[in-house]
Length: 149
Length: 149
DNA sequence: CTAATCAGTTGGAATGATTCCAAGTTGCAA
DNA sequence: TTGCAACTTGGAATCATTCCAACTGATTAG
Ligand SMILES: [Mn+2]
Ligand SMILES: [Mn+2]
Ligand SMILES: [Zn+2]
Ligand SMILES: [Zn+2]
Image (tube, rainbow over all chains, first blue to last red; front, side, top):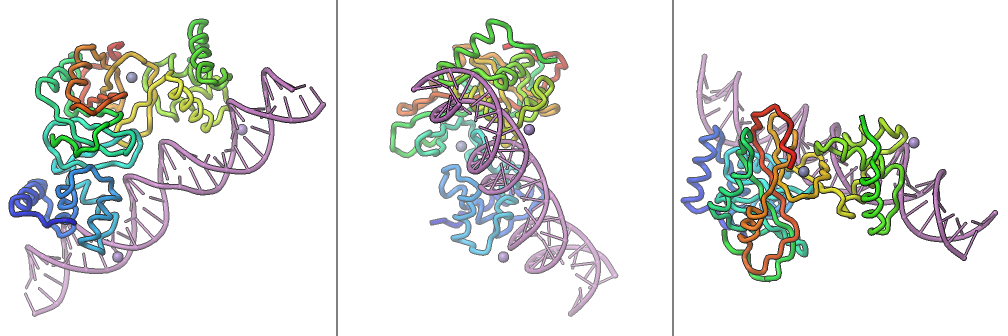
């Protein structure tokens, strides 16, 4: 079940879109709502399926367009593992990803600032990094929901 | 210019292949030679082009097959960045990757054990990781060859 | 109140890395 | 020899993603 955006979320979405010179549309609202109502790193097709429950006429092309816009506006992150279909993550805090090899599910792993700094410190002079991606792959023995990073 | 494998490299290749129940073939030798003679993280097509200089009849399918075999035998690592074509890396030491946004080139960044450990430490109980991928993306201001990690 | 404009949406075609497959090769074993 | 099993090869199939041209809807200019 996909909720509508609440006042705060709606404002944030519109503000970020406007800052990038883009408009708030019903499709963008539906796609964004899909992402924040279940933060499970869905693929484009999963977003598409879920968004259609709310807005049956929406096209796959639009889902691609919306997600691209959100990434450009800094509202969501793209998450890739090898060459699997791209997933999307609305968690903007610094975090790593853990992919469960049994289920394929992706979990957020909180990334403390000191660990992030120790990582940055391995870059030799002359290498200036804007993005750092960290991903783990292995077995998650818990069936519990992922720690909310 | 692609060198032949020296005695040591040949032995290591054959040993790793045999351990996985696989044979040393001329094609595998050519592909492996491509990887170690220029450790620049080539794409499959780049490997293909270079291997053809030595062995003009080799097919692209064979390059895919060889690389898959090498990964299975632990002789090389796959390197992916978003959904770009897969690259291959013969550096088996723990290291991160830096992708230069200007050139697309990938550099090895040495990963000290203490940094690796601090990374492992962020995993909550129940998460057992076998593989950790770390990749930076940004500007490399040096034109110099990459630090040999 | 029209008309032009412009961003956004849509369905379907095109793209391109990778995988699949069926038909040869090759080296070794019975 | 013959048979087998692994390997190679060219081309077809796959499929996530991108591209494109037509359509929609809101806003603006006359
Ligand atoms: Mn339609
Ligand atoms: Mn041929
Ligand atoms: Zn995430
Ligand atoms: Zn490497």
